[in-house]
Amino acid sequence: MRVLIIEDENIIREQVAEDLKKSGFTVDLAADGSQGLYVALEYPIDVAVIDLGLPNSKGGPVNNDLGLDIIRAIRAKGLDYPIIILTARDRWQSKVEGLEAGADDYVTKPFHTEELIARLRVQLRRTGRWTQAELHCGPIRLNTSEQRVYVNETEVILTAYEYRVLEHLILHAGEVISKTRLTDSLYEE
Image 1 (cartoon, rainbow, N blue to C red):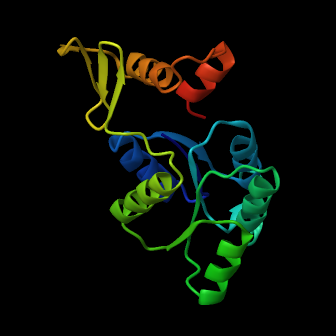
Image 2 (image 1 turned 90 degrees about the vertical axis):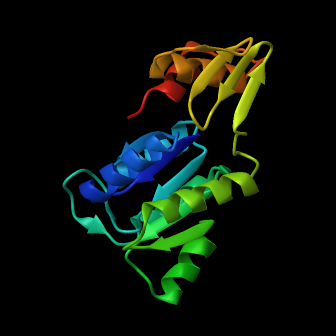
Image 3 (image 1 turned 45 degrees about the horizontal axis):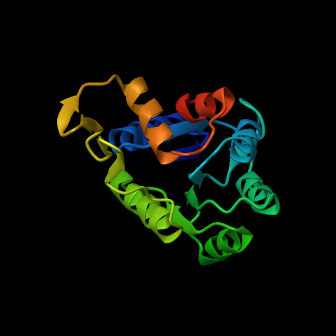
């Protein structure tokens, strides 16, 4: 599952990304609104975590409503993947505004990464985007929670890259996958 994190605070962005990767997610990172909007609209994202106050460009001044503008742009393009707001704003009015802009959930800082991951999984389950714990394709079985591969019940050791390629191909079995689409799904920003 591919998660986009749009967060300008380096420590938060990097810690959340690290914990998500440990939980088996593929993570795309954006530190500003411009980069975040581009990835949100152009990459195959399964769920997004978006801060509300973001600089438009790296090192620029913070725009307090840029996160809301990004959410509105995602929804205006017809993209329906789940969006979770991650922000320090804890007033009920901010929560209502974020949800009405198109977000599916709202988490306030400070927060526990375990809770954020649980909320991501809930949103993915609700939208039918959550992959099952095991994927099967002929004699191949992928245990996605442990990232292990078995062929005819014999474990096969793969690199992380090889595992991601195989997982993507199994998730899209029967489809023609272009090199660009495969590359986009495997490499992080």
